[in-house]
Amino acid sequence: MEARQVNAALSAMRNKTDKNDARGIAHVLRTGWFSPVHMKSREAHGVRALLSTRKALLNKTIDLANEVRGLLKIFGLRLPKSVQHGGFDGLVRPMIEMDKILAHAIIPLLDARLVLYQHFLELDRRVKRAAAWDEVCLRMMTVPGVGPIAALTFKAAVDDPACFKKSRTVAAHFGPTPRRFQSGEHDTPDRISKAGDRDVRATLYAAANALLMRTMAGSQIKNHGVCA
Image (cartoon, rainbow, N blue to C red; front, side, top):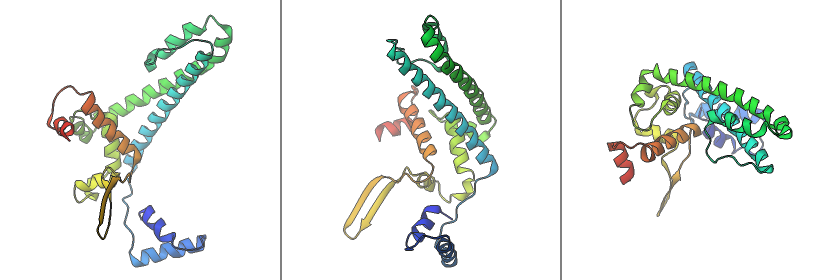
């Protein structure tokens, strides 16, 4: 059952207890006032787990790099604003090896960051291989701006296309469609509903931004986005 709909039904009860929750869920099932939810396949959950671990390692790598930047600023050492992940260790180590105090404090952070970054690279290769072996992902990656991350994220989130009767309902499922409040003479459109998977919306936004800002070749999709 759709969790938000059931939560709205149970919130009408004055006292929240396990017994009242069980009774409320039974009433919801008896009346049929619920929306069935598709249970994703094991394969889709595996892809989501791979993407989540890759993202977690990347975030931790960035966090440790920012920590090193902050410590170096205390000693008057400023790193360039943009440093590639692979070149960060080679840039910082020569700067601190001459100072025993800095080396004693920061080298353990650099070692931990390097291990995390190496594991991130391995997961990144697995993600790219998974997308390269999937026919649906290969078809989606023919769209400008769509890469392995966006293709795998969207495919794992949809899982079974037969769950959607129309293609337009996919956007509503993930929340990019606008909300609407209508009552009597009032008909007010609002911002997007932000329903569904937050990671899917972030990935679609990144793919659209890459299409509009980074892709140099023209296409009908890009022209539509620029004109809109």
